[in-house]
Image (cartoon, rainbow, N blue to C red; front, side):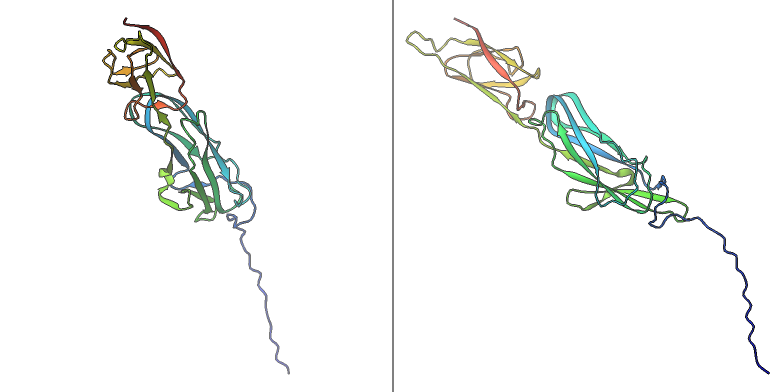
Amino acid sequence: RSNKAIITTAAVAVAATTIAPLGNVFAATAPTWTGGSSATIIRKIPNAYGTINNTFGYTVTADAGNPAGATGVPAAPSIVFNDSYTTQGEASKTATVDFSGMQFERVGDYSYAIAESSSTNPTVYPVSGDTYTAVVSVRNNNDLTGFVASLYIKDSDGNKLTAFSGANSEFTFASTPAYTNIQVSHTVSGNAADPSICFSYTFAASTNDSYVLSTESTCENNDTIKNGDVIKLKHQDTATIGLVRAGSQIPVGTTYSFTKVGSDA
């Protein structure tokens, strides 16, 4: 007699379950955002004074090493200054870079360089050399039915700005505007020249801002001068317009002229 082992195979039914992709390519999916999906660009102009008309442009550029399959990258914003400042101080405006419209096909970290690319008057308001990186971190949801995404910022050196994440994702571009002043002197010559006579000159400028006028002349002058005003000078007088100090700086690139209109003789 022989011993026989009898093996019975039971069929086990396995229920099919749909889970979020683990690096495989699936249809683009809108994630659930945690902590906020937008970053705020803050553009500051230190020592702002007078009329500022300038537009700063920005770029949002995807990193070449990003996983494939991301759509809906935010459009590049711009920030427009069109204001007048009666006292010298810091001007500031903002723009939003919104990632909420993006969809993703797979998990991964998606990096986007944000840089200031243009200025309508770069001589006076130069472009900032800073570049920040917005990182969208896409992961599987805990219930394995979708994606979750979070946002954080890296500075120009690649350091993660832990204070600027989620709803507080903001970063600043700034560059100091270029200012100068104008000096004008008056000299008379000849045997009949009278050094005590005050001569009048009309000041013309391409801005309508008012600037401090500084002179030790005995001729009567106001403490400020603007486009169309008259300045009076006698022999060897020197006047300075737009002292480089608070409230009286002339943007580099301003055009100006002095036209003699008469004398007190």
